[in-house]
Length: 67
Image 1 (cartoon, rainbow, N blue to C red):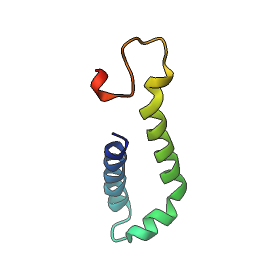
Image 2: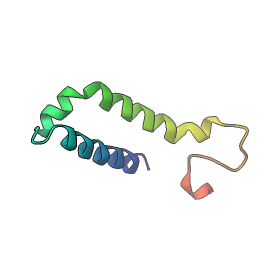
Image 3: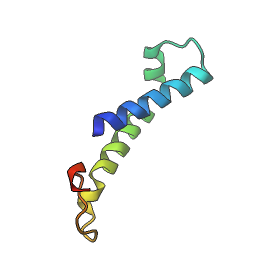
């Protein structure tokens, strides 16, 4: 689940970067935006596990099979 979300986020980020800076190498994009990369990964991981921290909602967990 986390890999899919990060892949979608990475694809959209790559499209946006290519639109703003056409022709920039992938390594340059990664180095220039490393703090944003780390923040994105942490945000997606936190959001993926947030349902486990919510004890008021009965029947909802981070497990997709619980829906």
